[in-house]
Image 1 (cartoon, rainbow, N blue to C red):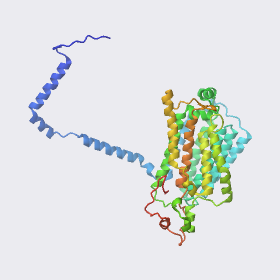
Image 2 (image 1 turned 90 degrees about the vertical axis):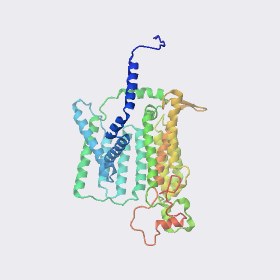
Image 3 (image 1 turned 180 degrees about the vertical axis):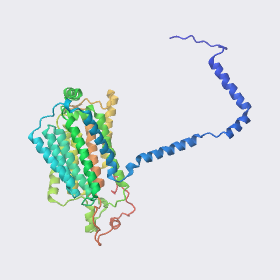
Image 4 (image 1 turned 30 degrees about the horizontal axis):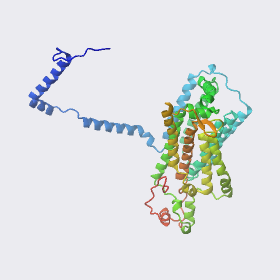
Length: 472
């Protein structure tokens, strides 16, 4: 569209000219009657901008404190109540909304399924009736192992191997934390026990009903069919489970590993500012100038067992090599960054129990923040490079390696996942795997922790730690 533009000294009476006249006339009137305007302003006190901001700021802080007050409680029931309430509500809603008559028949069961269910039920009974923390975590781990067996029976080797490794690490790492707590659980009163039983039965019934009504009764979705049929050609991998994790929904996986990285960082930060008296750093201990008590505290975590020493010597290198093999083959067979990281984490745990916290602490490779940080950089950097080269974030595709051939490009992303999983295990071992367990009062001849610190040449007040310094 072409416009005929021209300049003129007089365009006539237009709206812009009228608005300009109003502004100039109003300003001249206010200047002429300036004293009256000032007296009016002095009599009139409206809200100030600074005051409004301060009130809004105070109201925001008050609202945040009100919302966060329930989460500030140290009672576990306060944190579990909303989660369990939502679980029951969703279970009841889905059960009412689902018409069982319209559901497809459930999948056929086999004798092995019922046997596994019976064993899982027995393990669960063992968990809820356990009187000691060690018994509870052992039977809970047994429950997880049986679930892994069930996954294997259903033809899901990736899930079975992941579940097996997760349960193994969970049992080992929880034992590390539980040794700081009393051996037995505190028993509540009768009303609390009855309430806990009623709540457990309600939540369990709701979740079991939803699982029975919905699991395994629907045909394969269109998306699932597409992933199975086109996944290998689009990603270059035959293991659909892993290609979904690091190719099709890689952004979701990036969020999940970021949560793990934040958790590892939180462990380091929380332990750093804890007032708990730690074991003196192993590097600062002079073995020639310590007594039995100091040596016992300094070697926290070690189990003096020939079986563990031999197993660590023979198995740890094999476990680490197997973790790299699982990482490499994840796109074509059972494996991937998460499973490989869990296998490497199991080797770290074995090293901890066989050689003690001193060996973990002195290792230059087993550092929390470098592992977690490098994993995040590799995973997110892979996405940024893909964005620059292809226009898509976490694009997938294939890479050509000289003298080898083509591999999935998302193997780089899997390396980041691998490092972060190892990092979270190392964070727990390094920062929670040392210190004094909760025990009865020490013998009278046992030295005070401040005395121990003095013997190794470190003043008691210098106990602030970092991931590269002294543990707290």
